[in-house]
Amino acid sequence: MHQIRRRKRGRTNYKVVSDGDLWEHFEKAVRAKGVHAIRITKVKGHVTQEQVDSKQYRAVDKKGNDKADQAADVGTALYGKDVIDTAKNLHGRHYRYTKFMLDVAKHIIEGYLIHRKLTDIREAKEEKADRRITYQPISYPNSDHSAKLEVRGKVQRFSAFCRKHKCATDVHHFHGNLKGSHTSDPYKAITWLELYILYRTRGYTKPIEDNKNKARARATVQMQLDEFKSVIRGISDRLDFGHGNRQILSPANITHERFSTLAISGKHMAIQFQADLEDHEQDRIGDCLITLGHHMSADKIRQFKANRLLLLPKRIILKGRAGWDSKLGIKPRKSCPTQAHFPSSNSHIPICYTPRYKILAAVAAITWKLVDVRLCCIALAVAKSMPVATRLLTLMNSTGNINATNAEPHPASEIGDVLATPNGTGVPYTRTLPCASMAPR
Image: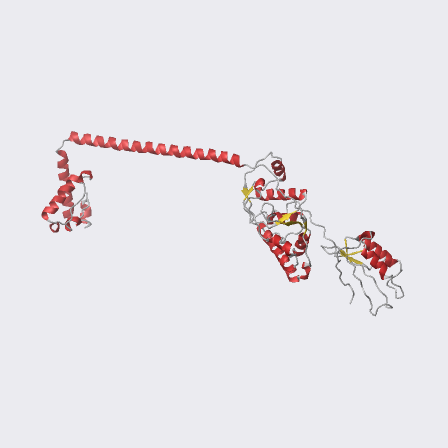
């Protein structure tokens, strides 16, 4: 109707449209009579008398629909009952055949999907079997230029930093005892995770201490690692590491999976430092990494290292495992007392140890006849030289009671000779020993 009103020629192929012959006659009638002479309204079929009485539909619409149904019955009766029954039978057969072919197509598709799923499962199993890793230890090549890192100064001088980071003293001591060299080869660079494991396995405390309240959550591995890195970088900013040692904290360009031989996937941040480690430390680091990545018992780790057990690669999850480094069998480092007494008749002479240098301080009293002070103490710092302290105290005791006002002090030249030679070898010291004044106020 809209196309006829706009005087356009219809392009509908009525031969392929349902009831196309009727629609073609209708279009011709509309064109002949005119669009404005025709009014079309929709009428609901098979309206009941109750619907008409309730005024839902008009009576004239119901009457016209009933006449149309009677005309349709008359039209179909012209072909005879046998023809109608045959057409109905053929239509039923066609419907059932169409439904059967649809079921066949669904069965074929479902069979293919099941076959594809089983094939994927088999290929995945074969791929997993090929991806299983055999154990190989991590390589730690020794460097020809390996040496202990030189750290000048004491972190204890930065009281605010030490109060904020309780592990600053331990990290400072660990860093000073670390042996290695700078490297630009990413395959030789040590990762932060390996460095933290080495720190813990050497007996140092956790960077973040466990809360005394057992109900409180403990710090995760990621939190401990971040605190450890923060303390090391903070110490390097405050103390003199030397130009060469500062470069070792620079990030290394990692392009490979360092722990792939331990069935651990992923890349891990590393620094430009090649560590010189003992064999037992290398084995311990590997065991700790396997435990962290695979949640394995010690028995399974031994089977894996003996190639009796193969593992699939896994990624290390650092945001959990709060108790991982508490169950590594780490024996805490024996802390030295802050003040001890040297076995001597002069029990008032203290021997002080620091966590790093184990400095021995011997105090010699000088009488009123020599200097105009009540008491003067000479701090003698001796690193790892106990025989020197013994000889020094022997020289002091040879004069008798050094606290007596009438006591004559031992000649300073003899004391200087003792201090100038380590262990009585006669070879002078090649470094300047730190001294600290212990004079009482």
